[in-house]
Figure 1 (cartoon, rainbow, N blue to C red):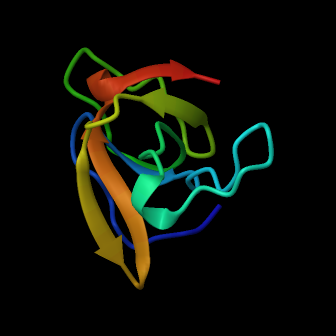
Figure 2 (figure 1 turned 120 degrees about the vertical axis):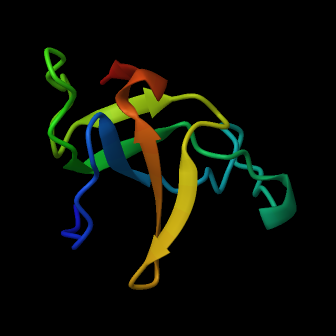
Length: 92
């Protein structure tokens, strides 16, 4: 888990996406052009929540989110997603 200098606002969270799968379960190597976008990641920063709606995710949680959720950003050479907590489906 990494530390970033970004502090999300309100109900937004910053997620570090998991690496895309390199091989199938049968051992076939997947080329970069065919890799699926990851739908799992680790929360690295959270906002303060909305009034009367505290956040349920915390820094360090592994979460599942929608395939096209959030906005991709790059900070200090690393890729992250910033999204609303409502875009997160589950905590693993």
